[in-house]
Amino acid sequence: MIRVFLGTALTGAFVLGLGLIALAAGGSRSLNAYLTLSTLLFAIGMFGFLARRNAISMLMSIELMLNAVNLSIIAFASFAADNNAAFRAEGSVIALMVMGVAAGEATVGLSIIMAIYRNKKTPLVDEYDAMSQ
Amino acid sequence: MEIGSTIPFTSIPWDDALFVLLAGTMLASGLAVVTMRDIIRCGLAMMVCFAALAGIYVMAGAPLVAAAQVLVYIGAISVLVLFAIMLTQTKAAPSRLVFQTQAAPAAAAAVILTVVVLLAIGSTTWGGGTERGNTDTVALAKALFADWILPFEVLGILLLAAVIGGVFLAKRERGGPTDPQR
Image 1 (cartoon, each protein chain N blue to C red):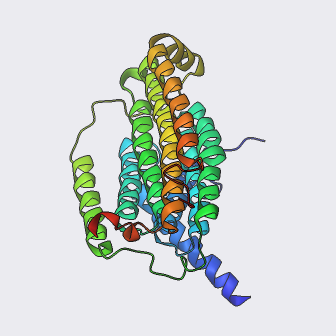
Image 2 (image 1 turned 45 degrees about the horizontal axis):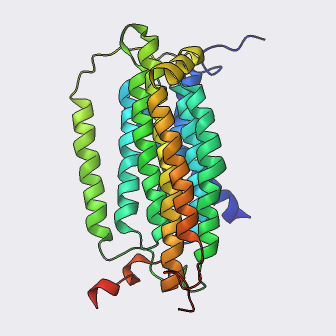
């Protein structure tokens, strides 16, 4: 019981501590906070893509990176100069396009992983070494 | 009952408090996606990360993109990823090493990228407005279905090609490249 409380408290403190990065970057009314969040999410995704062994983990990291870019597009559109409504709408349109392409990428990537898994019987990318033998 | 713009008895605005919570949830679950050992939990953490990001889209004034995020990412892509995880999971996989040998250089590269981009963001004066605004959905529809109609149609063809290609690649064909009995 005490472990559950302690774990919840520690997780909450961790989440709040990470959230305070966004506050330190300017809070919800500044462009810099959104761009900082986007940078951090992109870096997390890049680390996952380079470091994970599982092919599906690498695909999830790519999705994180695509979402980070989408966040920066939305942030730039949201802080348009002179309350420019057309510019703002085009930012949302570009974000929707990125989402559609990401959905196609996930479909094809996962089916490629399934095809490789059927031959190799493993989802770990460092065991795909047929070319080096 | 009137709700003020700040949390009662403090001077913290509601939107900043919500932003801190959403940002913290997004970053913490993003870290969980790339560091946790059990890959099913990674997939579930990815759903939490996308949900928090949808909340941040609402705060940035793009509610339609937030709705699309919930439908496309949480509803479709996450379920696809979870299905693929369950189809490819082996008994030995979770107990073995999670990271490749280049994990430390990858972490260093990620930290360097973060520092460089944050320095660039901090030293740039953005020419835009200083107040965030809401996206007008009618203006969005006019832009999507008038000015952007050709990219929209091309995206539809791309998705059709992706579906056909996905079925073709994952199909088990007798004597084909993915036939286990060959």
